[in-house]
Image (cartoon, rainbow, N blue to C red; front, top):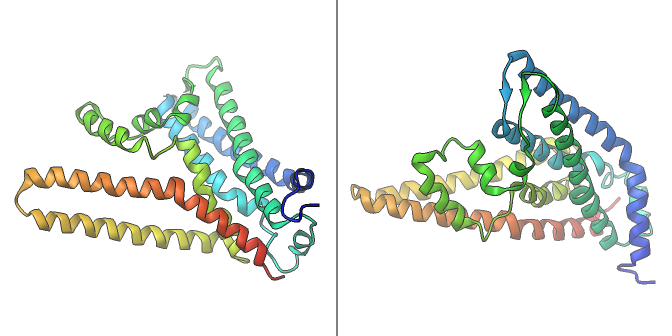
Length: 276
């Protein structure tokens, strides 16, 4: 038997973990749908209609929160000293455990959550009432440009050339919002396995601190560029846009491709070295 990976043992690992976690998933989906129905009810109470733009922003926000919370909900006990003993005693290898977590947390759970949420949204759009939801948001969720243009007030007709430039410049590096949030979930998977207690709170503080440092770096760079060009506004505008474009490219490349790979490797090493 291969001590690192065996396809039959891997399948049994996924099956076993699904049996253990499906109740938590059902409860989470029920709560998620209640929030979305409350969002729909508020639209009815206001007596208005909500088209694709606002709903796609709401839906992608809820799906993002769901994906980020999934590791803490489904794998909350696997690294704890007492509750995690059974996880440690599993005959599955570290690679099989890591891949099983990847399949469930980044594959099955987000896909099922999305199908459930968007299907309910579609059902609400066909109700024979004057107020409520109108139009389909499926395309908005899975298309980068449609999603960005539908929710961002920056991309008006007056700034369409700017939006097109940034979009076409970043498109070789970026993915649609849905795939992007699945990949960014890897950070939360690792932090969930890294911390044993107060996982969500400590993880949010950690991520907020990292983002704060990045914002300081970006703002400092922009201020330095402005001081460098002084009153040469024409060159400053062109150079500023080029610098912003370069920084955004680096951030997108890192967050979309590099960080997810690094985080899953770190998760594998963490599972391998957990001391119970």
